[in-house]
Length: 341
Image (cartoon, rainbow, N blue to C red; front, side):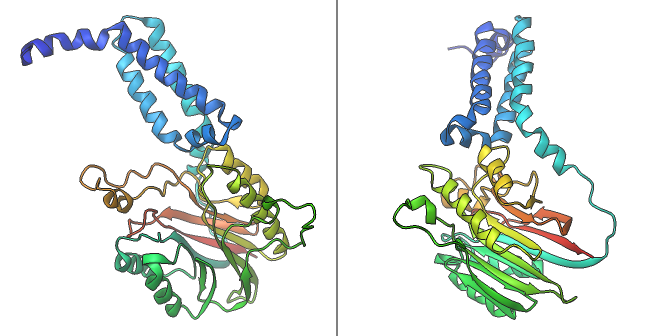
């Protein structure tokens, strides 16, 4: 058994050993390949959702490789790191865009939050969502341990719409509302289950103080795997949105898809709306890790952004940010949108 001095003396040799550099290069090259072929399978595409984590892993690989005697391994590792970082560059650049200058119109404060059926601190969740003072609040999983929070918040707003576990709460008058559904009848003689799949969701047509109307939607899509249920729900949601077209629209919720996954890219194309939440990680929160017994080891890693806010072109994004930790496994999104004249 070597003592501390012998370990320190051997340390530089261990770091410079060619096998360590080759192992790091092989692992990171494998990650790069998975990221770039993610479109071949939903299972592989899930790896793209954890893009930020793989960039960090590749960065550690670069650090391990730099002391190596193999120069080609150093340059190769830098190239692999660039290949891993590349898919997330557009999202990162979009996040860095400057907010717009002052515009006239209806300013609406919005917030969306998956409250989690296993909510660990309903009172904290209620206090934080109340403090947002949102004009329109979209909730998902407002059942289970979060049921009382959902009803308490609904009582605090003069207008509310609910469908299954989703809610839209509004300070402004709701003219009409309903559950998300495909607008056209389905031919049951030729239909398959995917044809009528629509995610849980509620829509509300709201009259703003200026008299203009806008549609606000709260929805919750399922996981991308296993099976094709998420893609079926995506198409069903797109059809439902088409049936609600006409007024300015804001779509909020838990989409269980994060950039730069192809699943989220397909959603961006299908909905005909602009995703305004860019580069904002909302999952997993400390509450999920605490429930799993990891509270003392990790605090709010926030690896992926699966909660989003979409809006039609009538809206300008003033700001959108991630809210603080609640009792949920997600963190909320809160922001301000301007419906331009």
